[in-house]
Image (cartoon, rainbow, N blue to C red; front, side, top):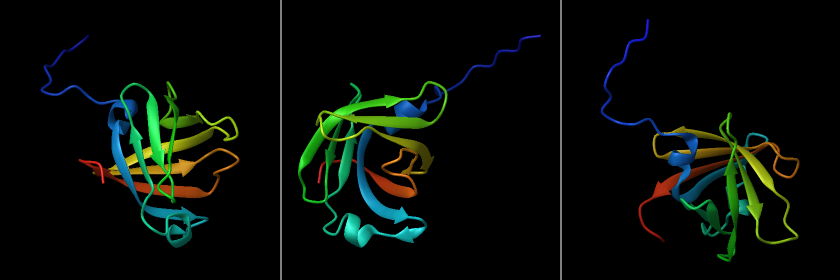
Length: 123
């Protein structure tokens, strides 16, 4: 038996929820806060665009870009930098209200947990 029920709002995928501007508010490595060294001036942000390009501002305020790819069956994102010398990074994605939580799963970001807050305008 198949039962259908009307819905008011279409459910969002992980990729749909990722799109937007995010400001780094917390960074942890092995459970300890490293925000003071990882982002001392509060300049780290990431803009995940709808066209699968990301724009990231590092701790110096410099802009870096690349492609983002969401796993088809798991809440995992891979960031592929346009810079040839930067390795790809994979992260496990979760959300809590207006917060994006990325947990490193690559060799270069294992045990790193980043928490972002959604922004509605560029800083």
